[in-house]
Length: 320
Ligand SMILES: [Zn+2]
View 1 (cartoon, protein in one colour):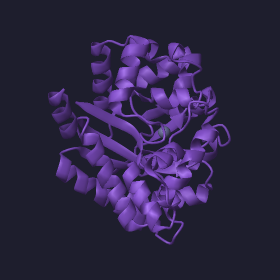
View 2 (cartoon, helix red, strand yellow):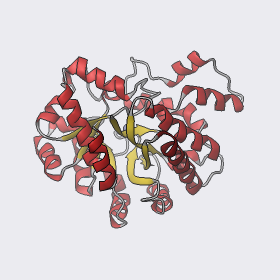
View 3 (cartoon, protein in one colour):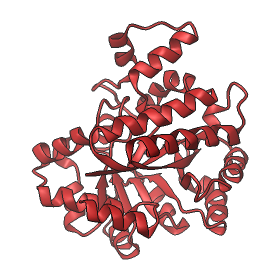
View 4 (tube, rainbow, N blue to C red):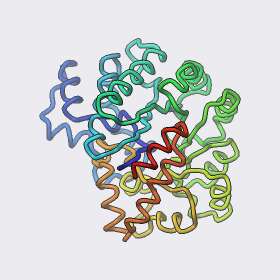
């Protein structure tokens, strides 16, 4: 059984779905050609370049039907590799280009996830992403809209986008507000080497860190994460592609696990990174000699740090 906590909807769209929706817009690609367009190449040099891969997928997420179907099909696709719990993240404001309201966007994704949950027996909920290149006002507006879905399809808030260009301290007010409203959050932190962004996320009260690679530079912050029980969502393939780490040998997964951090493994972007949970587990097993027991620990850590009720967590623990 697998548990996935860090998976972006726009980066994980089914290729057939993208092909079909682009065709409706008069954009025709042969399937293999489209796959190459969507998937990042191994010569990708940075996170900035990686983020350019999201333009075509976002064109398919501008209607209620497109959003609903994308969410539903993602749940269907992950159920095939025995993912039994998934938190799907997406940035509502990026789907308002053709006139949908932020509320309609969130409602559509939640509907799709719930339909997938019923059909495929996968617990599924949404994390709404604020974007680093959006203004604080825009992100605050999104949070206001998302608030009413908390506990009813939306489980948490995240901050995504270009971490090197827009540091986390620009978004303090957003997270202070979220905390005030009792909305839990994870923050993409330390993907581009910034220890400061990790420190900021911890101070703000993040329950989890996305990637957290820069933690390897700070024993002090690793101790703090352990003390506070902060989850570390690691995404090996994506981290190699964006050059968050220079090589697999230098990937700090085993070190973090040995130090007792609540590390877990995820895909980040199934389509853009050309990966699945199975591939991620295989990569760390074969490339890093991570044992079965350590992988099991990652699953337990994921359950422990999931934005889910205790009932769901207990149910998942029983299924391991
Ligand atoms: Zn991510």
